[in-house]
Image (cartoon, rainbow, N blue to C red):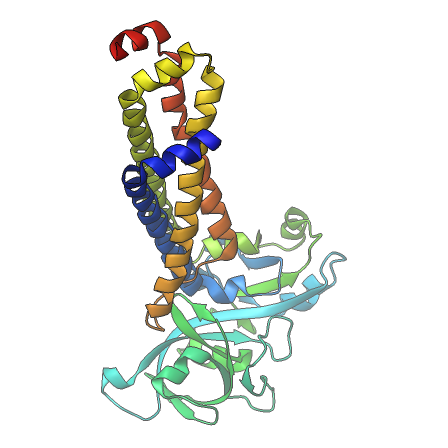
Length: 373
């Protein structure tokens, strides 16, 4: 380590340039990570936030809410299963709302209308106003970002292409579905909107799109056999079933993977070139007794110091950059992802140093001394 630090101090410009490259790479990785996580959060935050373990769909729905319709009467029967602690109905619809009747699209806000049962275990806690109540059929909980559009507690809002009028009774936080802010409504209110067209409910009593379960020890295969026509999946599978979720995540992961591979190549080439340039010096060191291991440890130490400091600075720049983003920017830098990508970058950098280490073992002291003379 002593030799590595001494050389870093001696060739400040050379290693400073490499540090800047590592910082920029780390900065870009964390920015893309935050944007990717932000997009996935917008897509399925409401499902991720559910205090649940499993979701039950219609068997032919392919774990997709919009393709599923089943009877809510199943809930009482499912609750009788010894492994099910609680169960609640769930339904979702896309809608547009406005404060007044208007034909101006700019005055309408796209939302996801989500139907749940008041006082159920999946109802989110309000940060302002009151919780859902069966006494207020058309009362809804709105995601807090609707405040940016001028909505507030007590507002009466109209649902486009419908005669329905809703009343905001409270605000919740970080609740989005299909990239849209959520309005949580009572199940009866949601059914009134979703199945307004005659025959839209297929003659099913108390239709719901899914049943959410709190059942950490559930045998989902056994439950599917117990009730015909259902498919039980984990909450993570339900999240992945959201439209566009896998595609968005796949794109971001592919970009990050390419970036990490490219960064490993750049770091490898940089230290390989430096090693070639210092062949004579390393040869002299080996001639006077320095072992391959001693010199290799110095190279690895240099890579570690530069990468570690560069990654730390990159993380700091990412958080500073996030402060300048507009409020509606889908940016969410998860702490666990920061640690994961930081470790990944550090390991990739250390592995890339093996290219230089291998070159050191090939240096012949006698040949190197001849070059010096």
